Image (tube, rainbow, N blue to C red; front, side, top):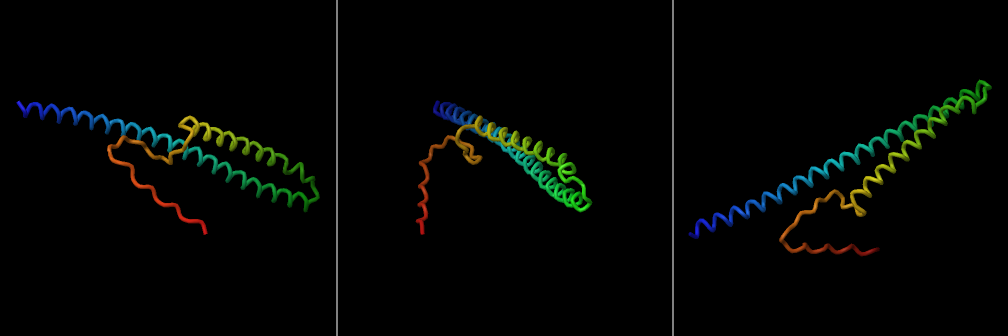
Length: 132
């Protein structure tokens, strides 16, 4: 019964292909979640930096106004400077959590590439440009 043997072999190969596809989709979903989390953290860091820049402008304006009116500049800008220090600490925490997440994913950053087993030979490496 050659046909039955052939169908069994086809069934086994289809199961192997299904397993590979399922593994690929699991890895792709996991990687997408990691990239989303990293991007979300990077956006938070950018927002904090934007807030710091706005506070710098406010400090300058408050210092100028206080100086012109004869007030003590340090008293006027003290709270804003404390807020800037707090935001820098928050930004440092976010940066450390981002670095920790990258370390947990692996020592090397693969640039978002998902590894999949392949039976083909490795592609030729591109030549590096010469330094001028």
